[in-house]
Image 1 (cartoon, rainbow, N blue to C red):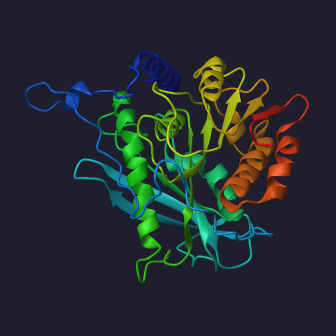
Image 2 (image 1 turned 180 degrees about the horizontal axis):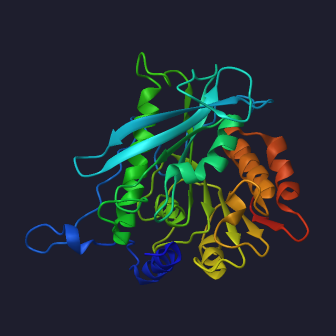
Length: 331
């Protein structure tokens, strides 16, 4: 099936989901016809209550770019939910613009960003974004979702309802590695600085992690060409950045604006002028530089507490004929 058809189906699903935000998959109903329940996320030990998050560690944001390492992790959440995860991270050595499979992690502790792909996507399609975030000082973990990834043996659009729990599981697995002796990431993760980001269906996954399947560990989020699958945002104050093309033929700009309008916390919206469903995410695409600079500085501010990065956001996102920046509650 054509990718655009699938993505339009995703938009229809978003409009059809009831307020609770749960979508059942008839192909996986247990005996008796009861709808399946998405498996709950596994919270990190000692996770903050819904009303507050632990303070940031107060470390300065990196002043120079890093080399980028990459590793593939064979994660799985139960027998029927394999979650092979690609991780890009700051690596030892001088940056050269490429990636270094299996390289050692650079000295220091780095925030974690969970990155979710869209329908028929794969983590590798998000590499142009993930590599630049990793070079800026973030560990970026991108799972391949079992029933919506490219080449899924049994593609099932309704399985998007289970992806927030998958994403939270990957976050838990990554944070656990920080304290696991002998693990390459041991001692290198800032366990109180966690964000989620996603494109298209991955963006819907992200907004569910802020609403009907809230992960209370999230300190910020980036929603790219997505919307909200029903329900209300809840939990700790979580700044959210939306990125959306105003000519998106797949997930409507209006839907993205509605999801933005419902956010009760500090928020921002980067409009890609004339932008489609994601060409601005491809290296060399119109608006790519504005998108990368804006999202990176948003992460630097929200996960490192970098006030200079926050001050740059308006300039990052304001480019005549290319992008427009607006925000509420960020001052």
